Amino acid sequence: MNEQFRQALSVIETLKRHGHEAYFVGGAVRDYILQRPIGDIDIATSAHPQEVMAIFPKTVPVGIAHGTVMVIEHGISYEVTTFRKEGRYEDYRRPKDVTFVRSLYEDLQRRDFTMNAIAMNEHGEMIDPFGGIEALKRRIIETVGDAAERFNEDALRMMRALRFVSQLGFSLSPNTKQAIMQYGHLLQHIAVERIAVEFEKLLLGPFMSKAIELFIETNLFLYLPELATKKGELAQLGASSLVPAHRIEAWARLASVAHFQNQQLKKWKLPNHLIRDVSICLKALEHIRFLEDWTIDALYKYGPYIPHIERTRAALYSDEPHVSLLMKQWEALPIRDRKELAINGHDLLALFERKSGPWLAEMIEDMERAVLHRQVENEKEKLKEWAVCNQRRENNC
Ligand code: ATP
Ligand code: MG
Image 1 (cartoon, rainbow, N blue to C red):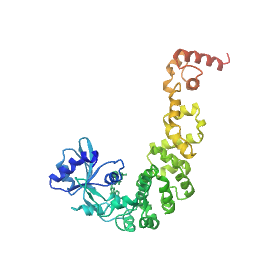
Image 2: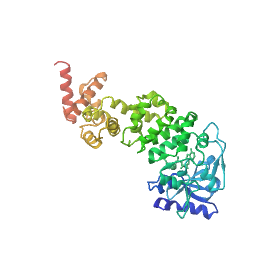
Image 3: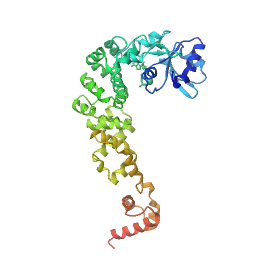
Image 4: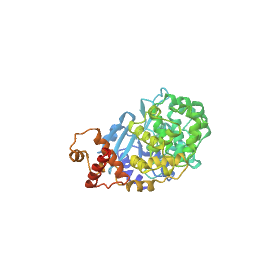
């Protein structure tokens, strides 16, 4: 067991002391077996939410209806979920009602893939009734039980299968792949926001090319917002081996290849701030194709967005990203923001004893450009001199 699990042991031990069963489950156990860095630790227990809340001093009822209570121990939060099986599935979406059960087996059985249906007890022993460890060894993604049935219960699982391909580089089992081909259309019943969450993880995975290939091969891409007619563009997206470092880059790359604008990004129901950030990158990429296109003006204009734009540029044009070089150049600019000008509007109004008007904004803009291009130093007196001189020139005197 690693340090993270050891720290979480007290949660399991406390539950057991109170007469309940408790195990580590889900992604953390999978990633631990794969010797990958583990994310959040999830715990499954026979205790009901009210019992969990009564046992631990610090809890947050994050999803009582689904049996989930967040337990905070040593400042770390753990999701503790009651063993459950899911109620009737309606419309191919996850069910509204869940039934709490007292057996771990049933809880593992409702999970999506065999590699995600492994439990680990407090001694580090694995409980693996569906052959998840073997699947991990063979690098196979396979559903727990009949794939067609499981995708009919919850069609989002097809998206999850492909995002795990992208994250782990695994293959789909023949049955799982076959069922995706057959039931891909059920994705139409799933909320776009949930599809977007999985697709974003896919775009950020190191094996994105492999996942995109499968999207095309299984025809699942037909049910992604705005991508049904973009088979070739998707294939092109899969061609880059550079892994995006940030969600902005992931979406900017997709948007660029698929010729998305705000309108199409909105169909994915992405948050507004993300759409704005992606749009800024797209705008920049209209005129930045080569490293040499990073002019002083471009560096100044895009400042904090430089890493995202540069990495996206490199991915799109199969080039090397030169992020640290560009960031050094940006930092070395005389100013990085208009606010850094050593003179402001008030100073200029006083200097010229004139009422405010469009002239003022124009003058500040001229000054900003002059400072940026080192035609004048960013010092108050020098800028005043420059302003007076510039004004005279404009008045032809
Ligand atoms: P990650 O490391 O990306 O969080 P994860 O496997 O932990 O991967 P989560 O979405 O956090 O994925 O889900 C936690 C666990 O819940 C999964 O490992 C799986 O056992 C189960 N699970 C999640 N979504 C579904 C689903 N749609 N159907 C069945 N089981 C699911
Ligand atoms: Mg998880």
